[in-house]
Image 1 (cartoon, chains in turn green, cyan):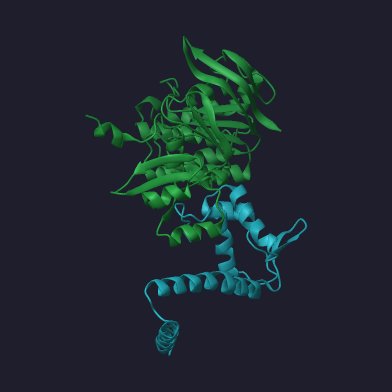
Image 2 (image 1 turned 90 degrees about the vertical axis):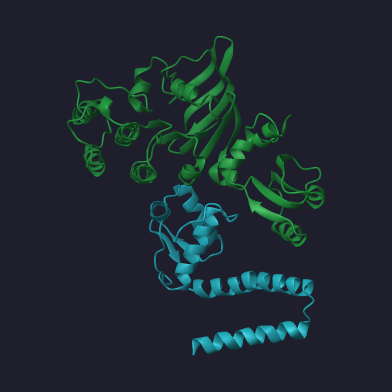
Length: 300
Length: 128
């Protein structure tokens, strides 16, 4: 069954379309990564799914219901981002106790466990926390609420790398114990891709790719070597990215539709075959122009 | 083991190879239960679907077999099978590469054989 169904969904702010005729489905109990550049429409999409924003047109169903103004969807959804605000009269420990009754599956054992592990001061107000600590505290809420649909919008903003790793581990452990639909949006695909089952890549409010994380990893391959030799091999194939490297040599990223044997032939011609990180691939796939920052400096 | 996320080798193949290594070194013996997809997922911090794909490779090659409701178990001739497979695949490929490199460097066949014998002898002396 699908947790989220989305068809021809559009959200306009004035003349600008933040989400532009987007269609996709997310199956229940999978961890999906929502990836996109700054301003691609990730937060707008997530806020519509969580019921915070009303779609301009198109169909959006969360657990078979329209999420906007729906109490049923709201009870099943947790939306975590770094702008969550809480009343200043409540201390951190108050927040944990007051929030709990709103969520049917709240795991208070894990809540106090994580709270102690990160050594939060129970008497501190939420607004006094540093950027990273705020994200850490909010992520605890996201994990222990165990909502059937849990959305993390840029959850690791400001976290140091140790806390990030702990967050991903804690999330995965609790997911294994209690499977649910999770959506994570992030700029840093490389650090969370192993956690993901599916990846949804959006660009300018439209869908660029929606496939399993394993497929994305095998989608493309890089080749570096003598320009003529490389180009003759990739002749007629879709070039995802191309960059002049040193004099007479070239770096090209193409779809990996070769068999192993061809790779060995290519290697024997002195062409290096290199893996393309999913991070880089997503950047190439959503690039505004061919080439890159290098070209800006070449002008004039 | 630490997974190499930058490698051309997909994570699920690295998982399958790691499990094969555990069988070869007899950390998991024949007819014993192998790690479940959830255990692997937790051990390596990877999505359980990735871990399942790694296990399925071993199941397809009949290195492990399913016991209904109990999980995956190591087949009785798994170790021998992995040894034979690695010999023919990995060693075969390395030898092919060796021959190509030797040709490129104009090393004759007898010279190459002499070099292999020399290397084996040195290795043998080390072990004594």
